[in-house]
Amino acid sequence: MIYKLLNHDGSNTPTPYLLTPEAGDIPLYNGPAVFGVRPGHPVFLRLPISGKRPLHFSTEALPEGILLDSETGLLTGRLPDAGTRTIRLTAANQVGEVAFDLKLCVGEEIALTPPLGWNSWNAWAGSVDAEKIRVAARAFIELGLADFGWSYINIDDGWQGERGPDGVLQPDLAKFPDMQSLCDEVHAMGLRIGVYSSPWVKTFAGRLGESAGQGVGSVRDDERGWYVGDQQFEVPDAQQWARWGFDYLKYDWNPMDLASGRRMQKALRQSGRDVLYNVTNSIHKEPPEKWAEISQCFYLWRTIPEDANTGNLLAADIKDDWAMVASIGFNMNKWRPYVRPGHWNDPDMLVIGAVGWGKPNPSRLTPNEQYAHISLWSLLAAPLLLGCDFAQTRDAFTLNLLKNREVIAVNQDPKGDMGKRLETANPDGIEIVAKELADGSMAAGLFNRAGSAQVATLQLSDLGLAARQTVRDIWRQTDICQVDSVFQAEIPAHGVILIKLQSDSEARRFS
Image (cartoon, rainbow, N blue to C red; front, side, top):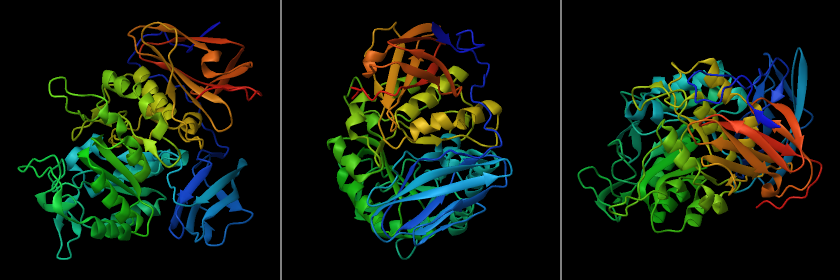
């Protein structure tokens, strides 16, 4: 039997089609099984539950120092000592309830699953302002995205103003008149908020960075200030971000140098707040494992392409172009050794919904390509960061992409395995990426990079599977067949079939 998507002719059609079933009224937990926090630092977690409102949250017991809001499902507090606490939680409404366990892991590792959220750059570039941030945050609540774990609202480049008398970088008051109030508003919704900076004298958008004075780095552009100055402000700025309540820092320069990266890592660690640290652009001479040690997210993929004439590393941002999405996503194997819980390789933001870097328009990716984009990033255990204008991104198709609890579970799996691109005997254009999940099952994406439908063949032996497997279509959330050795599917042009394979056997040799 050759499996295929029902009601789909295999073409790269521009007509949206919906695969995700409706979530329904019964409560369902759509979050990760683990949450990391450092000793003595604030715990802040909105439990992501879908289902008819209102909901009532309860628990038999909480660790001392932790509070649960019974109406919002917000966990807050502090835990002073390292260790793991498992909490049994329940969410109920008038039609049912769901009970689930959550492990609070207190230690040095945070971001034990990849972050899910939104970043302003792909929609607004340097024209970001406070109201655009509010629109995105409100959309997460109004559209139900927060109920599926989407939680970060990140301000990219363009927020910075001048340094105050104390040396602390202040916001551009014309765009962000009250940063403290904005952070408080986002937190009041149960969401987290992020900020952007660079160790350079000036950022890519021409705003002030974390240094001043003469350059000490290997790359100089005096006119634009694209170099690291000999006077640094990481400590006072990190302390200010912590006072405002920021939860995420995107730190952006090219090429990245470890000295600058480590200075900011130390400043964030000493700020008294858990700030997820995302270093972005391209590594240069230092080994990638060093970047994986100091940051929770790292853009190692940007070291892949080189200029054919100069040999210099290229660092182009992702665009809503299938060739670029595919080129990035299917060239990740070399970075697998550095990915683990708390440390994620970031192949850049999602380019679905209305994007446009200051002039948002619907993504140029077709529906097939958008399903493939989300599936591939989920298999890669990549951060899922939207970059769309939510004034235009409210359509059923896009929300269907973003509210599939089983797809999100592949991304948020606590094992933290980064999907591996397999070498298989298949037609040109067919790609298979697979990852092992914490429950011993396997998730696999069968992708078609070609311009017409093709049949993909997955040999169970390629995954180290020796027993009969039940095959589940993850997007449609339904079991489709059982196989003993081979699974075949017709994949639409530029499309994907995302499956889960599970058996009672633990005979696996996949690595």
